Image 1 (cartoon, one colour):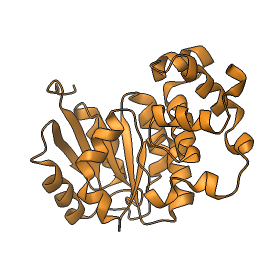
Image 2 (cartoon, rainbow, N blue to C red; image 1 turned 180 degrees about the vertical axis):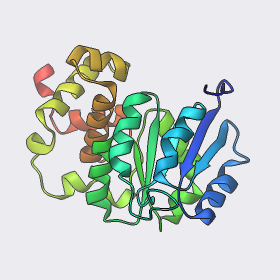
Image 3 (cartoon, rainbow, N blue to C red; image 1 turned 90 degrees about the vertical axis):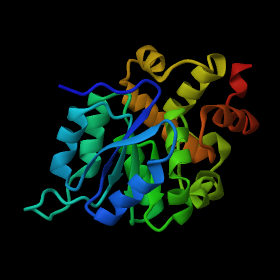
Image 4 (cartoon, rainbow, N blue to C red; image 1 turned 120 degrees about the vertical axis):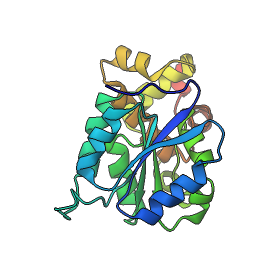
Length: 227
């Protein structure tokens, strides 16, 4: 049975096999109003049980988690993130990794993550509470150096977004306040799938939220056909 959560509190859980990282999250969040680190774990196999034990709004997940104390092989964290965001539609995931940012960011977004932090990004760690609030407000977080990557790669604006991404943006252009759940119903998709589409769209457009994405899409002429 899951424990009850305090209204208006963003409940955070963290999965990392390094005690100093877990201590760092605890120190950065303990005095933040409206934020609470409610649970931690150090292996991948502990993660599902941790989330089942109490309500969690955001999971900080190290991509290099070991499978268990007895099995140091890497856990299939991205696969599990996809399963968990499907099981808990309101759960957001912030991925932590040492790996190649562009490759891993896309893999994390495909899995359903809402943000990505490199382990050597001290700016992100110093602003962790702000990033968590940003994600729970419906935005995303990526390293600043990669936000404009889609445009910097020289892609034509017309080829910047996929047809499905354009479709979702077209819906939002008419109904900017429509929820992810409602968009999913209209398109016969699962809510996590729509969230993934939006996260990839934000990254391609070099923005972190819905309003900025709509503004950038209009600037690039991607929504001109809507009149």
